[in-house]
Amino acid sequence: MSIIVNRLQYWAKVQPNHIAIVMDDTEYTYAMLWHMVKASVTDGYILKSNAVASDASMTVIDSNTDISVKPHLEMENGVHLIESEYLLEQCVAWLSDLAQGIYPLVCHKDLSQERREAIIDTCTRSDYIIPEKANFGVLTSGTTGTPKILWRSEQSWADFFDEQNKVFHIDKDTSMFVHGSFSFTGNMNMIIGVLWAGGTIVSTDSIMDRKWIQLMRNRAVSHVYMLPTKLRMILRHYKETLDSVQYIIAGSQTLDQELLENLKIAFPQMQFIVYYGASELNYITWCTDEEWLKHPGTVGKPFDGVQIVERDGLIYVDTPYGIEGIERPFTVHDRGYITDEGFLMFQGRQGEVINRGGYKLYINEIEQAIQELNSVDQVVVIGIPDLLRGEEMVCYVVPKPTAPEEVVKQDIHGRLIPAERPKEIIYVSEIPLTDCAKVNKNLLKEWYNKK
Image (cartoon, rainbow, N blue to C red; front, side, top):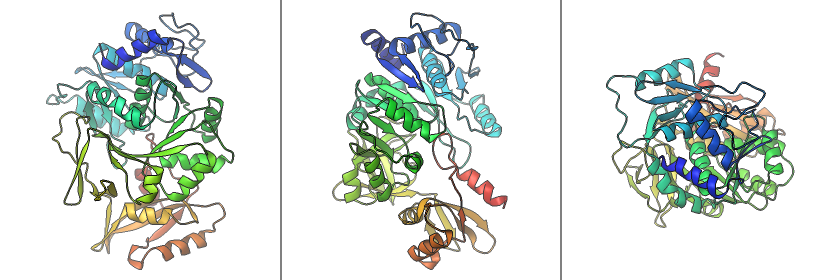
């Protein structure tokens, strides 16, 4: 029996009527979730997100809509590519595959046909070997190309859930709001981590941030798990306060002091927990908002059981909770160093450098400097080819509502030295995100090339 599925069965017996997942206005208890997984195993049926499960004892959950869907592409080597666009379907299909000893691989719903076919070609090569201890695959975000397939054992997560749940204050009384695809490794880990603890996941497939706020309030969520890109979206429309939120958990991506201060106004009872992690390595470090403010640039100290060393400016991680098939310590080529106090200082991905005629511009540092300006709501820096200098820098900026474009330009030029100033500043109303809630830089480059 799958470790994770066995844990779900345990909670279905111990607390059958406890709410496991809330999707919009529909509640699914642990008993209902368990029966959905069993129904999927026996009949190949999956509950659609708009169907209502009214009786947890039913083998196949009925509704007024056709629910006999199979969101799988089955491959000869036992890999199932889960292609549903709905979080609940993705989750149930994933659990069903684990229960059957099948290798689930959840596909990003915004994946192009070309990249989808590249993933299938990789999995079906005659010489392709799935690591012996692997139980499921995950896809990297694919922000700069075709997503990579990474293979994990259930044990690599199950052994770490108690540690991460302790740090994130997750237990059976937790009600956590999560948004986005189950294909995003962070979402998958956090959702299964909450279910592991017997808590409740609250979510919606809606892309409207007003719907997110409504659900948070109606369900009195205690935790919010989101990247800063989506937290900014909430603050644009939310002008009230929500006292039920005790913790907001987010990566350090594009986090700045103003965002943190505004979140504390909107969620006055919350503590902000910053984490640093990678799909290959799971969670690596964490810190409180107070520590983040006291040590600018830090992503915290290692989780228990995780060790970090710095070699030639790169971060190397030794962890028993990583993917299969890597040598430890392992690096994802992030730059950084460790302070005397043991804090990891993050300096960006090694490849995120723009070489402008021999002058190196570090994207993470440029974005951070611009993001801190009072006139800027959000910024993304991309590199574009240049015949004269080899590469140039372009900034996409979402200005603050009260900031004229000319003021934004003056602020950026005033903040950066001449060698760091962008070739062009492009003003947009919104930064496009991938299904994994990360900035879609591929799309931004396409926009620029079509100008």
